[in-house]
Length: 287
Ligand SMILES: C[S@@+](CC[C@H](N)C(=O)[O-])C[C@H]1O[C@@H](n2cnc3c(N)ncnc32)[C@H](O)[C@@H]1O
Image 1 (tube, rainbow, N blue to C red):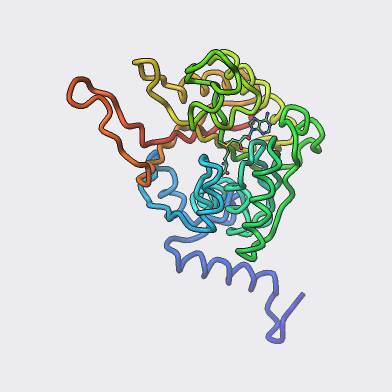
Image 2 (cartoon, rainbow, N blue to C red):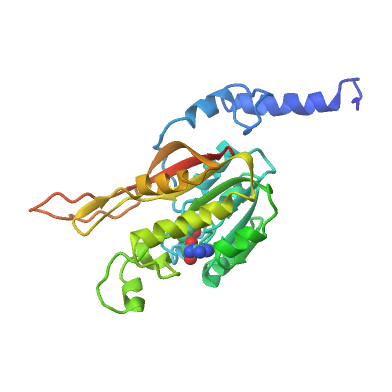
């Protein structure tokens, strides 16, 4: 279709898009099938350390009841690297919706799965308070609900894993589950690291089907210091997910969370780290 001056309307739209992109630095390559980034934006996001600060905004008080929530802006930045405008993001462990809020911020669609109704309800409240598009969160076990999603229906998976019961302060299952903030999302009462890894493998195996071929998956995971030793959980989880034949590990991005409160662990007797970074493991569905 032509405009009043005889120029092709589709060309004008493309040029306008390219101009916007150039104003953000660099030019947009029309062959780019992955995202809407310009060359310089693409280059920036190939870095394996995210040093950009992310504010604790968007109804932070409400969302912080969860304790494991991720900054929606950080999620939006990751979503922009692995999708184009209008595409769909899946979070099978959605919590209070960091991924879904991030998708709304950057004009993508999203779908979440969350075991706990309370977190899904908080996500809905936040959307209403912030006047943001509200995407569906299916309440239930990701292992079952992922099987109900259409095959090849999502462009990107962005998620953040729960942990197992780490602090066995009492013999009873329920009080042990309350002992640690990290263990708080262990709704399924996973008792050991082995049980946890096998549950994560089951969930990510089920995430293969809804993800489109050549689609990416990003997984937040924190290492931890427990029982007098450092647990390189990111390494263990990366190895476990890589055993799923469709997923290939592509990167390990470090996000440094400066909002974490520091304690002087070990002082003045022994070195104990304050783990203030998280890993974002990047996989691609190749198979
Ligand atoms: C670390 S949190 C995710 C936080 C989220 N990124 C956010 O910004 O709010 C992990 C979530 O997974 C949920 N969860 C644990 N096991 C699950 C399962 N099998 N199916 C669905 N959700 C599960 C927990 O209830 C918890 O809210």
